[in-house]
Image (cartoon, rainbow, N blue to C red):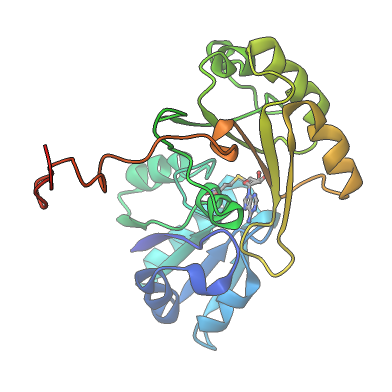
Length: 252
Ligand code: SAH
């Protein structure tokens, strides 16, 4: 059995209880060494075989899984954040399906959640934005044209950009081209929930210079939108004049 486990986005104690138990029981662990906190490997048994997928191609990863399976071992495939976001897991699932190897998936705390925590922010403020767009700049992996940054920026919803910290001048230009004003609040969150986390608040127009000043070129998320501003409406959920399934309004 292969367990795909979300490691969480940094701090080792952010893994789920289920994820930790799977690591503790594993015979084999394949972890994404580029971003998974190595402290998580301290939960593994001393005789656990550990592989760093940062140095492996897909075929090699599948080969380790297939071997483990033949020996009746339990394998944990440890991915950074949550496996469903830029995790390159689908190609592994499909190969395992072809080989008839069983797998399951344990979710993790994605870095976009870690970034909100670092910012003390709520992405979905009433009357500001009720939508979060998770995306990236087109790089060596292309983003389909229908999802260009200007076309997404036109919604002026909350945006969180992965894998884009090295392209901030271009990102600013494309966000502005799409309809955000240069003064729109933005923030760069570097290594959210790690010990060396950094939060840099800026605007859409000053993303690039802010990253440069703070020496940030990777392992960062860019968040954009008026959710970082001061104007919003209170929720209905806790409005005393609003009846919900669980609470009757004081006055209606
Ligand atoms: N599956 C991961 C994302 C993997 S893609 C998740 O759910 O978070 C790798 C990108 O995620 C990085 O380039 C960076 O943009 C972002 N990232 C991962 N961990 C991060 C962290 N702790 N702080 C800020 N950004 C992070």
